[in-house]
Image (tube, rainbow, N blue to C red; front, side):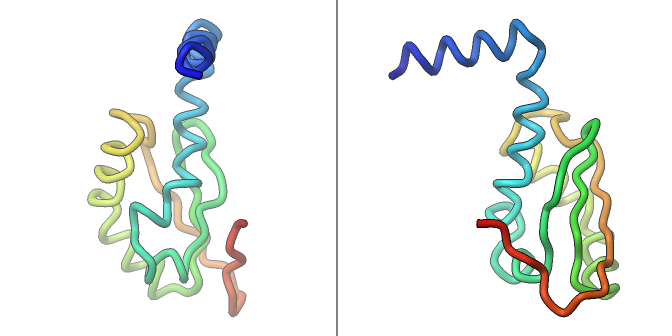
Length: 102
């Protein structure tokens, strides 16, 4: 299994896909990075060109996260690798419930 991991990693590096894969991992690790309370009120949606888009439950959460953006970015990049995520974009969606990804 270790040899397969090395082969996959080499493939990703050689094809230039490694950074894109690391960026998409941000969607998966979002709850771990921000904790349960924030994860319940947000949903990491996608990464495009290093920009992670997060849907937020209301404007209060959007403002709070915006004020803590630098801290969140540091935590994400510590987990994913330096400069993997370059920016966070918070979108306020007018719904009562943020759909959690399974």
